[in-house]
Image (cartoon, rainbow, N blue to C red; front, side):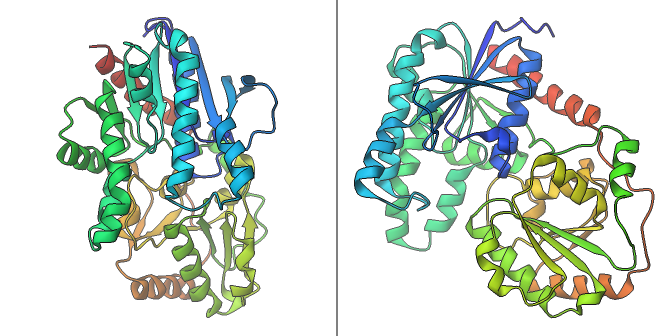
Length: 403
């Protein structure tokens, strides 16, 4: 496919600095944006965020051969200084209102450019397609809600009338965004089918979540793994890279179980912003590493043996932690929820399926007691393989949107 076949591509997201990959959504946004910029020569990403410490309305930055244009959420920042709200509240309606006002302002500013381009939008809470249509933009719009977040909200709310009312407004707004888009993209067949059923969608496409990391080649992986000092005990790793209900539950569960295992029988590494719960850690073999840069994460996974994904609450999309473990060739201890939506034919790792906290604990203890040293001949994902797979999906999506 010619890099100029589709002319210009404008990508929009309200996620702040996705190239830093602090969470799974960031990884999807940045890796897909990077791949699209290789498919289409004229690609630019507009990133709307609340915390940018910049004075100019549009500030370009070059990251991994992707041109990002940073846009501050000026209305949000003005109101937040006046009210002093807690920005991490999940569905504070006033925060969402300022978000939509800022999106409308950006849509108006980008309308003239958008009329000459294909548009790709990321964000489960976005109304950017709808605002572009209000600005008389008739271009092809591809909308990637990152996961069927509406399904998540529905499942959370159906047990309570008050919860249903709380989420009802968001669901109505989400329908506006879907109807204003030409093609809607989902990360798994499960999310795609649920969305078709819930919203009567007809033009949908599947772009599986990209692997959040890969290795240049087997030699690169082997070199990183050789940095491990000893194989006398197994190394476990838990990637819990973003604050959220599911991650918080699994971090606390994993700490509780490993606290009760003798410290000389294992090493456990937990990544993500969890230093505020160090008081829960009673075992010196449990290490809270904080948020790691991409290269450090690759090094950590190369030295590990088991990846942990005991997720027992619902979440839409697919868990990138599971894909990261698979990319590094780890054996994976996972719940059905952590595997939902993932094409297991892509996964070459050995999977230990656990359906409850008790099964998870029993499996961990058994693996610790049975440890007999390094497992060799692990199959890891090379970057060429990862790129080829993602490119095929995106090229099919672009063709479907152009029809």
